[in-house]
Length: 261
Image (tube, rainbow, N blue to C red; front, side):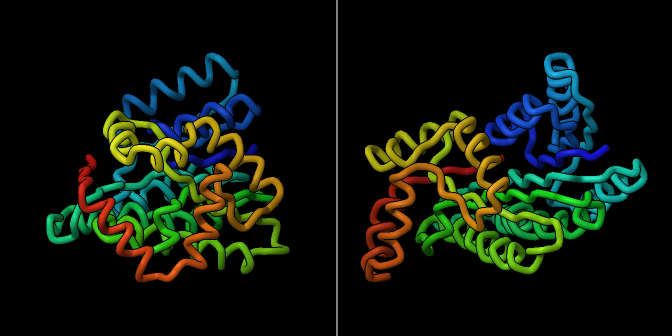
């Protein structure tokens, strides 16, 4: 029996993936920071969809706890046919306004934990396994005043794009998803609202992102960008003069600030 791994399972996008996978009858291995929220989500999914669930609360900033998650999965003889990385830290502010703790947190969760867990979980993969990672349109270009988040998402896009080709022909499909704004927590909804017209046309619901991402990995797409506007923006960012793009981003994002956790 194989399981679908979902990180950040109790958050907005993670919960949407959890429900979409449960609807399809997939058994789930859910992780997040809060044991109570994980237990409640697992109980609800089991009750509605009659699937099997495993939960493991894990602080992804802690390397020992990340290893503990892999050790637990191995001790349970868990096999994974789907790995979905959703967990992320979205601090949005000028770099010098960060604390050193927030710098470390964002790097650990967005980059180190995602890559490290992929390495461990793929050692427990099924004959055919799908990997989805939630990157971001914010990683398409460097972003002044969102620099660290943008850099970590760019790293994920590059890494999982390379992994797609490394694992091709080995029974592993890898798709990197680059959404724009996704209205989840209240602070995220407020940030999208503050971006005005651009925020509204870029945003897609968590359910939309989850549904389309699961279809994209079935087709083994290297990258999936939800929404026509975001696809067009991705093209424009590639051809527009970099200096012009960065000045535009700096002017807009200097006015916005959002912490996380």
